[in-house]
Image 1 (cartoon, rainbow, N blue to C red):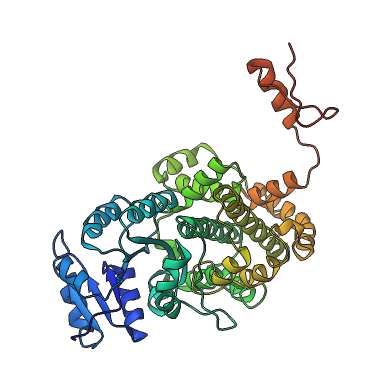
Image 2: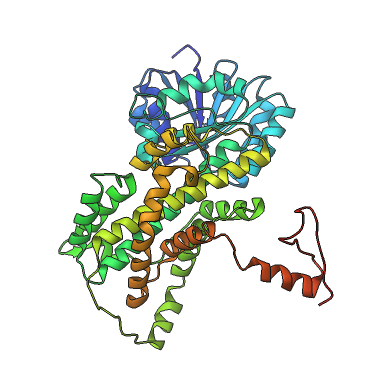
Length: 465
């Protein structure tokens, strides 16, 4: 192959390999690089042995040779584990690149790190894009959802390749679109992961409730039926498959230890919500539920403290459970999009929520029929509670979720996210909250002052209690 490549991929892990083949499949001349030390001596060799027959693919373990193989302005996609390693790679790449070259970080980097790296690269004349990529290995190979953040000018130079490899929505449009400045793309991916945490936890809570009196197959059948209608989603589909999977005569799910892992991206959303002053109770609940699950030994020990009798006054009402699930999912997406809205206002990103919902409608882990609906809803309003279609469902579902929460209490089933969705709805639809007492307490011990209902909003008062 004598001609230079139009694109480069740095890192041939699972995601890097998959996305490289996706790019090559689309006909682009591609250079790939992977180091040949630190236990990765054979990574490139193995990749090229399998795929080196492609005429549009070149492989390198020499960094300078890799860079020189790409036409200018160079476009290099970094697909490595997020964290300090990205800075190490960036420090190696920047001195070797030329003015106007473009680095794309396709990992799960924290948006504040992306902002810092964007400014560092820009100071050296190199353009930097932080691109959230969702869809896992299969998505990277066949068509992910991609969320690029940077300058519009730099995105325009890489858009053809990124959009060609991304998934397509129901109307054939690409599930990749310019998000906004510097760290916005990775912020959106972070919130995506937070929403994902909640969706997974909600399904786990439904599974826990149904397991009291239903078999795995019966639960799977319920999820399969729901997946044919308005509740259709990628996660509910794979959950049904998981429930039916057997190893011999034993359901595989019964052999899996109940300790949930996490890579930190869910907690980032909660931390960002704290920093921005926006309620994010469902994501926090999902993160803490995973943390609690990790204390397996303690849970086994303390489970002996109680022999609580589970009250089975009546069978679980699946119709009510469906309504409660629908209710909770709407609240989850409300909290996620409100978090993005607050970030957009605070950082002046000017995010397009309808477009974000659209590129999440396929290729990503949280793709669903609801996301298609949100694409239309956000064309009219930026708050789901301002949308009649949404509030009708929530008002109708309030009775269902209260009954399901009661069922959970009676059966001693923990419902972190279902309960968080209910209390958020109650709080947000309550005219007067007991925060007046909090303000009085703060003023009592700390002279923090308070506002009064009978005075102007800009006036503050202190009482000598």
